[in-house]
Length: 506
Ligand code: CS2
Image (cartoon, rainbow, N blue to C red; front, side, top):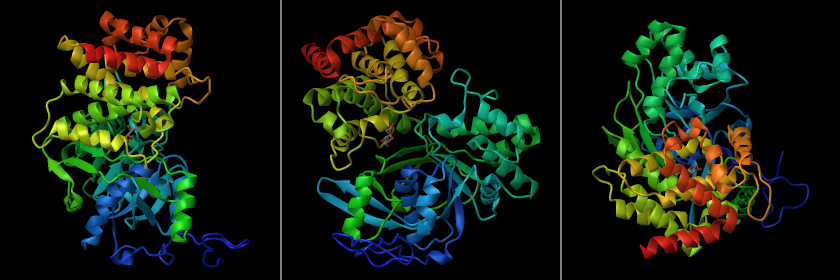
């Protein structure tokens, strides 16, 4: 088919070989274990870049240590893209760790193959029902849970959930797929697997359990009882910044290593995984790669969501509006850096850190991580799906501040940044697509008001995001209205600058 690469320039008519078991990048070692001897012990739902740079890397350490029970079958719940990237590469991909001029590449072999749920839901259900499979991990993003924000229960009226309920043999949602696989296991006299959520949500294990049990109970109460009794849904906190891979990243890799890797992921040196120690059966020894097991994930998750993700989202909206393409570019503006400090001060006062977490060190590391220019982490990427992210990243923190009688000017500016972003044009009048399940609603609400105050009041009626409490609190509505007004009049840079000066003068 192809000949060896031409490097640095490809001779015309020659194709570069794809990465595979038989074509490894020049100068890099492949997995140090026999991949043919690996058994599949895990299934992962939502096999995007984050899974590959995080859970797959932890699992790789277990395989490398010789425990070959834990190969992963990955599944995409929507598009065939990842399957097309990885299946022709025998599931192999490169994880590039970047910081400054440093770049360290390793080949990860933990993924055995990728299934595409809409193409063959039965194959995916059967993969999860296999006797050797003990764990199903998930990164399905906030919107993949289909829970009602007000009651926390599964939204049975949701179109996708209702469709799965009508056709339980061809599910498409994570709750539908998990219940189908658990039903098959029960019918075959097997034990359930552990379902381990790795999404950035408070009590992600509890939420997943709720979604699965609600679905199962509506279908077969005995199945729900069985899952409740024998199943496990540990909570976990995951942390690693994994920007989307760009075509430039692929081209640079190909030029440097002489093979094409369409599954390449790039990430930072930092990585953390804190997992509730509650499993239905066997599990990989992820602690070999530094995973921490604990009884209580909640304080870890809350610190991460409010300090890291809260600052990330605020930087993403305000930075993107101001025309900064990446997080490090935004952080290079000293006013934005000081803004992150102040916003984290506000957030920190709402936290009770778990034993073992030094908040000062954590925050100083975070700033370095945000400044990692080698990642080129796009503000636009973080800004997506804001309606799903805002409650746990900024709004819950504001509620906690209000209940303590504390102000929240920086958090309010973050929320106002989200509101302003719903317009779909930046401050230079450049249009962009607001990628969010509620984009049509937020856009309409944004345009219903004229002034910043009116627009903020209008968006506050969106209970699915703002909840019932904050919109009826004049302290919240006024603070966010004033911040949005300032953003519209003066722009993000001047507003951030004015706020940090005001805060410094206090
Ligand atoms: C980011 C996160 O895209 C986003 O919303 O805030 O993906 C963030 O990079 C990770 O949570 C870091 O662990």
